[in-house]
Image 1 (cartoon, rainbow, N blue to C red):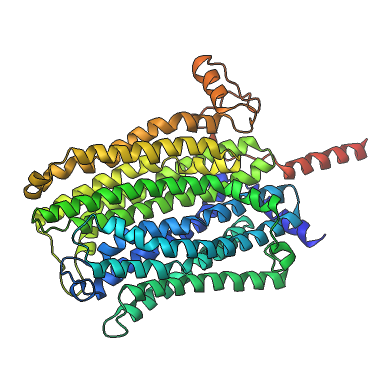
Image 2 (cartoon, rainbow, N blue to C red; image 1 turned 90 degrees about the vertical axis):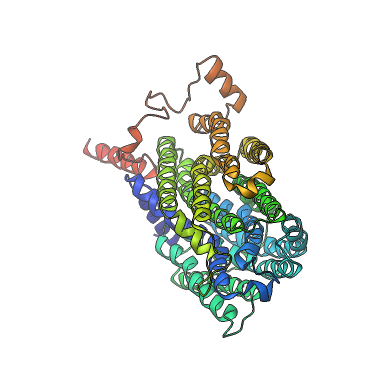
Length: 560
């Protein structure tokens, strides 16, 4: 038995486990850790920098701390890291499909070209975002008079240095996703974690005024070093597996040479995730824009408050909740891709439902935790370890904690479509995802933020902050509206599993007007979204079972 056949049998055993819940969870956890590790860079920098950076010394403002500056930089950093979704998500979807077809050489090429794409796109991203950092910071910071020129310069420097982490994260992510496809869940979970204590340790060394006292520049270099260590850990582990001949990751340069066919297919698979993530960031940018606008206008009225601390806490929390949702969506996509390649559509149907259940459960746990500890989170963002920075009154703290809770309540509704985005990528239908993501996240969301902002009388709100309440209901309202917009698209995604001939408009006509749509791959009436049949563990009808059938036939022939 050759090595490729042995590895493929291990994959068949792993993916054909009838306990789909367990397999889905095992595959998703490493991606959640990966997403959280990426999202945590700005969070760690915010908390540590708030403790060590004196606002009056570094920013020329006693009422401005490092977390406030990073609230503007965070969406920039996340968007910059999102560029890699074009290829890292595509690699994760493409590999299981070709392995199902036993195209082992193509699997090597996918990973190799994914590494090449990470280096090329990483270099381009560094170049482009280096020059974008200054106009970005100026656009958002200038809406808030609390931002001094020194604060803007520090923010620009932080973003420019952090761009260097992009290429390292891209290489790490390709390796981690390849390991996850191969069923190596523990290593794929540990590699991203390695970077976190490194980042934290260098944050303390670089920013502590009793050590180097480098300010936000130190935070940026700590992020870059952490990303480098994460990439190095991934490379070293891949080299180790190569010596054991136990991986499809290869350092043979012939596999790294780009080919249009494979590289373009990788990006087609990854485009849905990339575009959805981009629209979510655009959505959050308008949220940030109006928060900074409100904060600046309140300051013009002579109101010194902790409002900007609320802004920072809510923005970074949004990215954390999104990381959990994306983790389950992207994690499960590997399982769906493997069985979609085998045309095990009943497994894909169950997997898609399980994806929604896990997504809802995970977000619910996170939301309940954040609701319970909202006041404590607000204190973390508002109070320095050594001394208070513009300490809030008890009334302010209670008010902003309630605003924070309202924002958190709306997030699961906005992010419910996350698992579906992976499925559109798998089916190479990015246009459908682009339509409803554009409508909900680029048009409807920002428009409703603007409408809610218009309801606020700034002069009255400066003396009575309770009048800001309508704006903070916007996340819940937007979540409900977006769910209504997304539902018909999600219905198409689910009910047409394996039916690539029926277009979106044809499905809507047959489903909602003629009411006679029937998926040719499912004659069972249990193929309904609300059916609970997916809860049970079932034998997976794949190649393994086909081999059993063939063996039984041969046994019967021998007996005759």
